[in-house]
Image 1 (cartoon, one colour):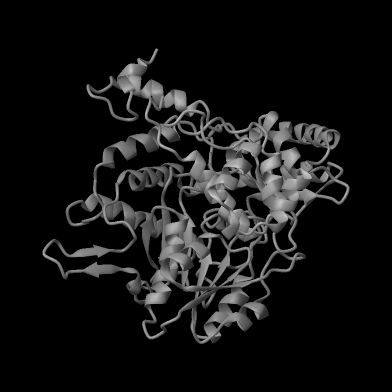
Image 2 (image 1 turned 90 degrees about the horizontal axis):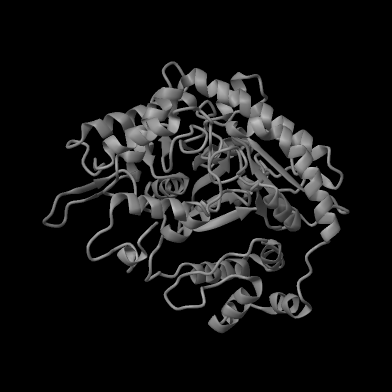
Length: 505
């Protein structure tokens, strides 16, 4: 039993708390989370179901948790492990010995978003003469490109993708390139639908214009080369493609390392050079950073190093085989249910489906699947693309695939019986007329309360419980245009993120 009085005041207490009590509090908080293992969570986590891997990664993390990546001369162990991770990523993505791009270099970052921000920063800083730089991305590109553009004050030119292909038209990408364009980007695969963009064609038009081309392979870059080795028709997307100047790949996704570790690769050192930040014009140490952070814990890097070495090339090939087969079986399960259709034939590790015209309400279906222990990711409609359900498939899903089909059919039947969510007429009218600028704090609180979101009843107690069913929330967001969605979610999350002055456990 946790002594609540000893942990009053949040994470700090006057006399300190015994280790076992603190861990008990952490476990109590974790009990409300989605399951990170077991193959029933189709987003956010990547589980290979390799026995002992968690313990190995945790031990490696512990060994290097207090090592600081700020100065590689003080901690050469971290430099050696980073170089090994970059080398491994380079070999997987076409930069190894004897390949077309043997001069590949790279850096280890904290995740895909940092890798993409750095790719944009590097391209921007390579052209200081361009005072108003721009980047060209397809509308299916990861939102981190928009974040990079926002942070770095770079204009974002978004090229719509056809609903029929979910991929950018290379001619449309070429037409979007301007004299101020410093980077063109594409995905391998796109996160939302799991399809690979026409990288060779896009890289060619970028090269013809003298512009860098970045391939965002954060999501599937570690798996696609193994799928190709298994005989799958994976299109060219890596450094074997002329014109590809940089690639990002997350090791905490399908390399199955703990979060957060990503690698940003450049075709050569000259292309990477603008990525560095150096500053000597102050009385302290000269700052030199290849990535955004200065101080970096060696824990995640050591955990990734241990993971890659333990699984090995043969292990990753086996995991890719298991995952490929699970994807195929899940896709078959979707095809077998009347009222559902695949958004695209699976090309990687994603199964994405939507509802037919006479199908169930997808957001109700997501809630029904959650009740049956399956945690999926709903995706809102956008620019002619329908709302959809995204399944990120990992090796841990394979043993549970046979259970999913019957549960999916049962959930669809329950969603049909429940009927679609209908927003109250006044709420639907409000969403249709409301602008982000007109969203007052009082209006936000009222909307949140009506949706079952918001803070607890007592000041300083943090958020109240989230609603068990999210279909109403998702329906409201789906009815709102993107700018209003953004503002609503910022306000809703702001209501949830409030400090607690009592015990967090």
